[in-house]
Amino acid sequence: MFAFSQAEDVKWDYPVKPGTKEWNELKTEKERINAVQIPDDVLDSMTTEDMVDACINFPLFGYYSAFNTPQEGFNIMLARFNIFNKVCEMDHVGNYLTKIYEDAGMSGWKKMGDKLDSEYWTLRLSYLEYFIAQKEVIYNLNPGEKIKLLKIAKTKLDQKRAHESFNSIPGIGSSLLLMSRILDSENALQGSLSEKENIRYFFETGLLNDPEVANEILRLTELYVNQ
Image 1 (cartoon, rainbow, N blue to C red):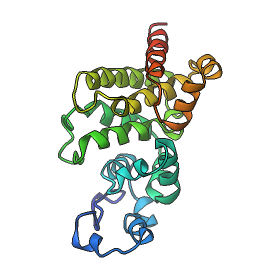
Image 2 (cartoon, helix red, strand yellow; image 1 turned 180 degrees about the vertical axis):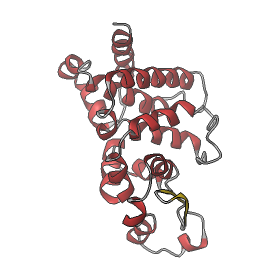
Image 3 (tube, one colour; image 1 turned 60 degrees about the vertical axis):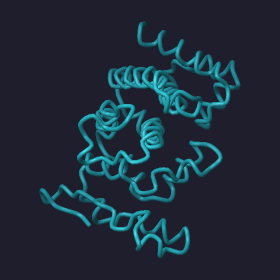
Image 4 (cartoon, rainbow, N blue to C red; image 1 turned 90 degrees about the vertical axis):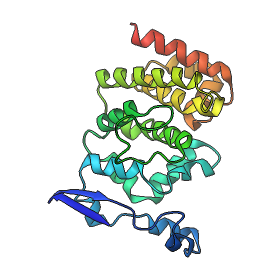
């Protein structure tokens, strides 16, 4: 279930996962939720990096997509699964998530595939972007770190537009949300939010329902990184 490389370094592998016999024997949603909770004493022993790795490999990582909007789904995940609240309290979580994000290609991990799951990649990459876009992560980065993350997100967006698996409104929505949340954390989105209902809706829900929002976020991104 877990392995120690040092006394304080705990690598967690979920003992019950979807697709296994044990998982199929779980009868209720409550049982499935309980099956992926990490014991508190284990969480308290995990490093930031090991905890983030466990979040990326979370067996129910697509849980957020079962709700009305991506942000509603993440709010519920933060409330129901103990690892997410715990990891958001850790130091330097945004820096390590940025490092992981930079390693994500359009078909899987470039270098981290030995420890991070790439199954259901299109959904997993969106999950990673929605995860990083949470205010608990974004607001703990300094301005220089935010600019670096914003540039990475813009690069991912450009790559998605050239890739058939991601070149759609749902495919690019998570990249755009991450970009908009970074801009907002630096007060670079306030005017647009107050003036345009469609951008405010996207920012609050993570649900992209107007292609013009993408153009506005891209325009604001260019202004911000080139100022």
